[in-house]
Length: 181
Image 1 (tube, rainbow, N blue to C red):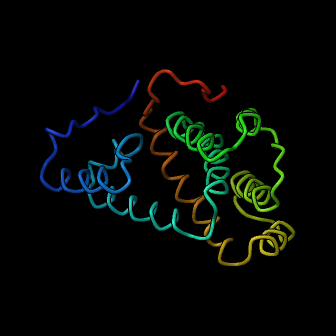
Image 2 (tube, rainbow, N blue to C red):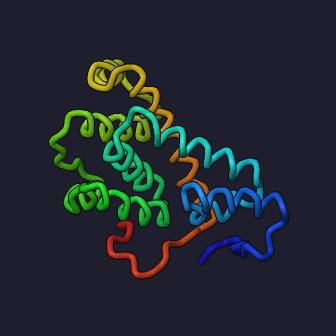
């Protein structure tokens, strides 16, 4: 059960309503951890802007989804996992890849950049950093600009997942691929 009450649009103050309406019009993303962020409208808005910046950066949609799945799995964040499974399927990521990540296994990924995104996210979250070998391989495969975007995406989505997990923001039903226990 969610630890915090969900603020209905009709109950929001002017600043909350402004940022909520802007997000609804631009990205449509106002659920999940944003149920918590709405209490701090400047944070809500900053998170929306960072998400938009990273979404338009050098990582492909599939690469972003691989990262987000790894991060949501790492933090046991149910709502983000639910949302990222839907997004991953929408960009053509196979259910077998999603299931492998959910089982904390290495998925079979044909694209070297996608494999690198998985490897960097996994190592960074598990070890709180990248080894010299991991860094060199990632920079060679991704290039410096994409590596910066990759690390920023891992950090940004970790905040999203920590927020959802802390406040126990649950996904709606039905949830066809729930997060494994």
